[in-house]
Image 1 (spheres, rainbow, N blue to C red):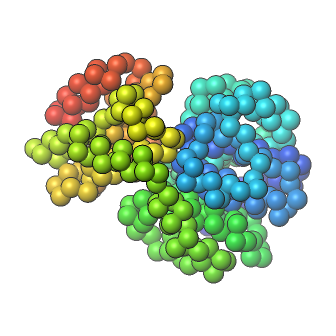
Image 2: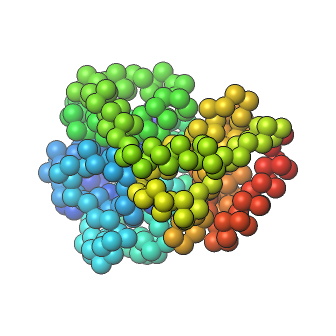
Length: 337
Ligand SMILES: [Mn+2]
């Protein structure tokens, strides 16, 4: 069994006892954290629980279609409501992150010091288990959404899926595997997906919503990244794309517009390491991807105050864009060969 029966019983007890449940997603939310939260929301709704999703900052608009009719708070916009929600809830369930700082600096301390019961369901390395009352952590799954499916299945004797639960889980699996191009070599993932389809997930529709809803600006920004902002280090088998604040402004950047850009680095034959550096309001964001063995999680932890997975990770810096580009270039030359 994936988790001991005692864990499952404890989870069931905690959910049974709680009237109000708060689901927390991670900062810069992606399809997995939002998909898992939507699935869990719909599952808890079927149990008549009063549930709400707490999202640290705005999520990309291509996820709007799964958020219809779901109550949520964007903490960066409604900080007092976020604080009140944490104070008033009976149970906090964190999805798709391993440490409270991943819920954003402004929520971190409130969550850590909250006396409420806290549960973690996550697939990242080295979870902060001491900060939670109950942890469901497994790293060799495609996504937190897949893990959530397994946990719910262990909890329920009868079929528990509805179309809404299934769709949330599918969005998480599909986006966290880059549309089934990495972390997807397990038979189990496809067994689960088959069941999700049985419960009404329209895979074609989900793909249209997630991948084919670019604005003109977003598509032109992608073109600009590839033609004007790409540096290739052939010897080091690496590629780097950067975007300055001015670049983002020029293309009227919206949250989610850079989603997937870094993966284009890896579409080149022989390139095994890709980086996207973007200059944001208060910091420089660094997204890293790899093919094969290069461990970008280690790289992000070592140099860029970050982490993630072996093939997909990220970090940040408060230095200037030029400083980051100069240092990242040095690191690429020293590490990748
Ligand atoms: Mn994930």
